[in-house]
Image 1 (cartoon, rainbow, N blue to C red):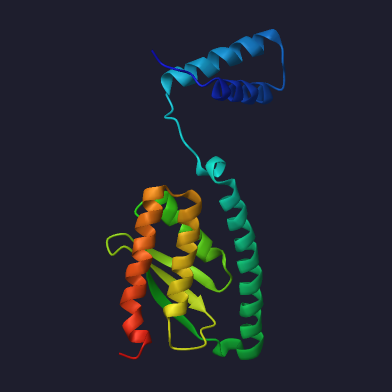
Image 2 (cartoon, helix red, strand yellow):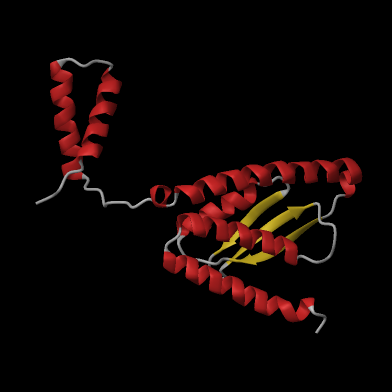
Length: 186
């Protein structure tokens, strides 16, 4: 026996009533029939949304994205005013820290939201992002890779499972370990 979600049935009924712009008895009864038919023919899997389990993370992410949008816009505007068409750009390769499509797409969109930064390609076989960065001031690309990794970590800590967070933190440690000899001049 199937269990029906009363909230989903109510939502479908409300949508039906809004479509018909009427609350007459015939429209109401037909809405209930349509809602039950939809729930019977197209059973939905229960979805657990981390939006409700970690609202403080969602708020922190929204505030961080607003700050990043503002500060990146100022930086790109300054570079455009100062260097004009001579503004340098680079394409960097940043590793993908998790395998869930939702988190990869969320991180790519967060990275691309910053002015002057855009994810050109998500390369799943190589497990990396190719990120276009405008306004590069030095040949060192690690800071831009680090920005992409930090954006991924913010998305994973907001929407990921505990296992995905652990795996992403391990990926960050591997990245730090691989970069530290080069940073030390070895």
